[in-house]
Image 1 (cartoon, rainbow, N blue to C red):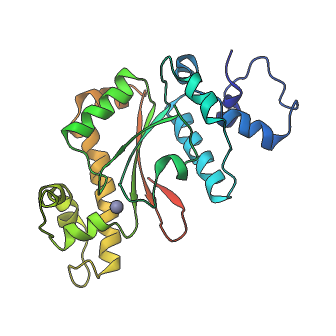
Image 2 (tube, rainbow, N blue to C red; image 1 turned 45 degrees about the vertical axis):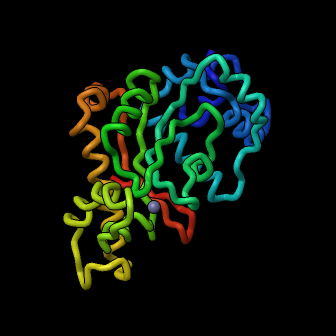
Length: 237
Ligand SMILES: [Zn+2]
């Protein structure tokens, strides 16, 4: 039997009367129910994106669901079946689980300053999708990103120097008007947007495993941008 969570994505629902409980309570029940492998298999990539979007609407409305975390701990102790992955920045203002209002067992998250991908994160995404069955990857950039600013200014500091090199392709590709400096807020945003776009492309360009899933319609990869002033995430493309 499919979960009540299926309500969010228009899936057929067996054995559940839609009028049995009020809408708000019903949404909470759906969002607090741990994903199972069967439920994960019933989701399409578009369903996975829709669930992130509906969670984000709850976040923006200031109405996140209040789940019983220990219940979810025990519901997932035998295994996990997350429906999506988020590749995000380490920025403390953009925690994926909070901005998409997701719970234990719902999403894989990979976080690195500047939300780029390298071999390690590509491998992590291959595990999350091909092995563990997640149906979508969201590359989540954000405004006023310190890593993007550091790459623009070509900051040199310890291991940060090598890390920031991963963002230089976006710095080079972004359209520049005015000075090439982190003080140029318009350029900082354009580099952040370009970095998300390049990262989305790299996921299939550098991973045959991910490309095969996308080509088969089993995986969707999308970019998104978080505005730290409003908290709003805009899905790109
Ligand atoms: Zn950042």
